[in-house]
Image (cartoon, rainbow over all chains, first blue to last red; front, side):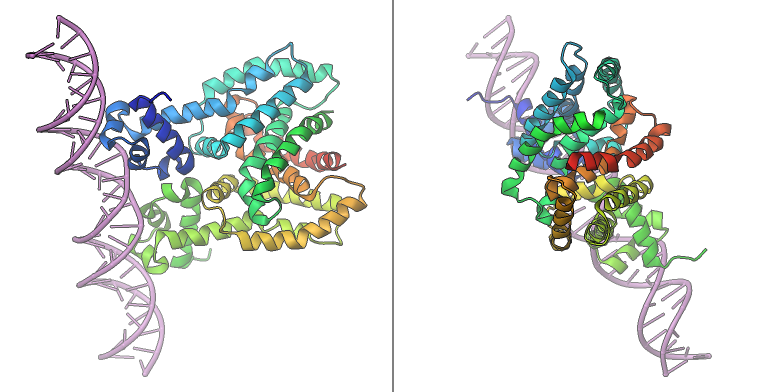
Length: 195
Length: 195
DNA sequence: CCAAAAATTAATCAAATGATTAAAATAAAT
DNA sequence: ATTTATTTTAATCATTTGATTAATTTTTGG
């Protein structure tokens, strides 16, 4: 059991508080308390709430969207495998980080262009490869629709969990099963939609 | 041009500020200013920021999810028509209210059970009808998956707009076309996935 | 050891923010 | 017209909150 450095304790607490409450809803005092440190230390190490937030949001953004382009841009991996890998990885990741999609997408809707560079690059190396693979598999769907369908069917069910639970469509206890079942079906579904 | 009552001016401003900034990020002063009234009037009419928020969130929730059950529960409407109606209505609604899904789903993720009653009722009158219709059409998909697929494919592209624009997958100018094209395709896709 | 540097704390500041109050303006009732 | 009730405003309060300061403790380098 390795004791974290003060900086790491603060970042860990910031991750927890920011992802749950968002930037505006988070209080630096809560972060300090959860980190078990004096409030002044937060500013001593990170200067401001905003600086600390930038560190967390960047980290979380990469956690959520960093995997897409390495998977999709690899020419040696068949299309079907790519889909399966993406869906598996997202299901695993989001089961352990349920607040992640809302946190990031909410922030993107407020502050639209903070990740332009990263995303542009990801598209540039993935889109040509995908275009070729879709064509070679006799599929007519455009790359944007292809990607949109994958992440819609995979990520949205995590965002909609409170809704489906409230409606009684799925119980909390069964929600993981529901997600696992979808994880196993989505690759087939995506292939059907891409024809 | 009918002049709004003071109460209505405040609610209109509250709708605008809350949906853009969320509860924590919204300031009562901003709402008062946008309504063109004195800050004290807001408390005179609504008592508190929270009361005003409750009115807005309820209204917006019903705007976003109120349409589902009336459409899905009607036994006289064929399944294909229901899907098309839902997708058309959502695409139209969300083109004019882009912040709506994030606003509601974010709030639901923070305060999970405020709409239990409404949603439970909606499910109770829709699920049996849908179950029968899916079966009669020779479809094996469960009702929760059926509903999840529709709203994932339809609503998520609005939430993901900043992401897709940042990545350069779709330009802002073409995004409406992209959404309209999807609106026309999704009903077919849903039928394929339900088999 | 000791002095310098780094880390940590308690106390406090200044600005922001939700809310209230008391007075003024307007509208309604008699 | 005059009183009463309602609506609106300016000023202010009390609390919260991000940030700073000055002092204290701990660590490090010589």
